[in-house]
Image (cartoon, rainbow, N blue to C red; front, side):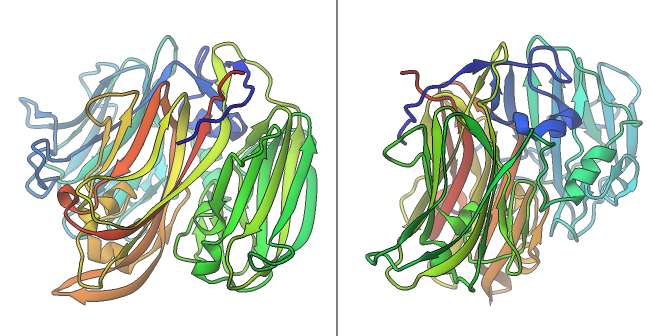
Length: 503
């Protein structure tokens, strides 16, 4: 992937931590700080994937714990801090959990700081783990997911009474900081409100927002007006939001061929050049996407709230690459003046998005969502899979694998598509689309029963709180089927912040 050649500024800051990124619920309090990339944070992923390379990712429970204590408790997570768990996910037996109590031990304590029955934790009735911070299998379609962040100062151990089966944990570790460990009295009220307001800007006021609105009519490619500018501005600033409302009913083909293009600091080539369907959360045409950062619907504006800083100027354009039909859009862009101020110990990243596809991928190698050499953080992804034939199924058995800074083994290794997007059990998952603040499967199509198992097309998204930080390189990929044994049509979009090359 081409690296951005831009002028960047070195920066750093303080929030809940000392000289570092805000941690836990505090991370969500000022999402306008997303472009600040700190060097003291690393992201990690623990799951029940088969360590032998097979597909026993939780079926028999072979890798469903790190070890079993003398008292019989199954240890599923154990790390030294400072750190923070941002997401816990499990599948159950069918649509319920039958493995007893879950216990949280902080900072070397011998007595669990918190314990309850697993099904109670995800029911939404056990404070402080309430909806929409948690969701059971009827909300997350086969999965049991907890997005309540749990910081730990010195250590965190999580145990269960019995073998859990499939599970994964997304967490971050920090260096040279001081944070406060979680307690059952933790106040998540602001985060709950934030999640409940998906569709509106999650960032606090960033100063005077200048609004540029326009209605654009785009001809077919090759005609007189296939492109229109939505915003042109000189000097430094930050785009706070982009909203686009099609004044017609676009189909999937159209949303794959209207391109959003962003030119930073006088670039001749766009730093972002992606189709608007996947950019706003769906690779299968219009869908009900209600994510924290992006979303769309058939009855309102598509929205993007990722902050986009620029130092010398910015141009945002909408382009039609289709030779079949044009369309009219009402567009709004809100921006503030001034490049983000320098902070000691951090750098300012430019927002980027990359679209890839392989129609189909047949090679016995991973499908790659993003492959980049440089400095930055991945903050989210959208992926769409369409079977090459109705009866070629089980592509969902492919594991996510993310390699960071040239490490030989993936630091993130998942257990299958539905698991990585917080659902579970392929048939139930495909039959019950969902859209939640940090992850979702907003649309499926062409579902058929193939010998008792449903197959069809799906589009999914996931955001990574705190960002997956990398200093030298990152490769985000997934298997297509177990051991890449299933051809399928894959497309994807990755969101990230990149530190520009110095000129």
